[in-house]
Image (cartoon, rainbow, N blue to C red; front, side, top):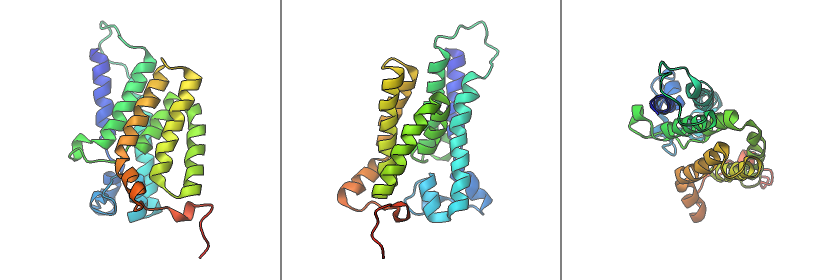
Length: 214
């Protein structure tokens, strides 16, 4: 348990490093949490700072999920006399979940971070890479039909959870990760859902397939 706890802590700390604030420092001290929606994620970065800024933010935030699940979860520790109480798959899932939680509630930035989607994407790429296919298909189709990024993200992660249930089974670490993160990301997007219900949610109209011509 000691080794698992250390890995989980390191995964959380890694997740707490926000790509938007790192890139913002390079751009002269920009803090996108004071702009647009006030969120520290890639969508707000794109809306307030443009494509290049948002691309770097996405690379960092996705990379955190990849590193947490591929490196931190399996890093050797000088605790060989302590038996591991969980299988590697469950440790990987835990580290992925903690990195996402760190992104949403970063200890380095007053626990005010993003909504977790990009770091989730990186973690999923290691935990269950095949699940990226239905997830991305659902995301793209929903975005093209509705223009709502938040709705597309929520439906995508729930689609992934259903895929993992059918492919890996209800007792698998992959499904446990997928289901837990589906609930968590639904929670982090609660403001998007509220705005969607009252008709004030922003649309990414350039991505819409069926948008009305001007």
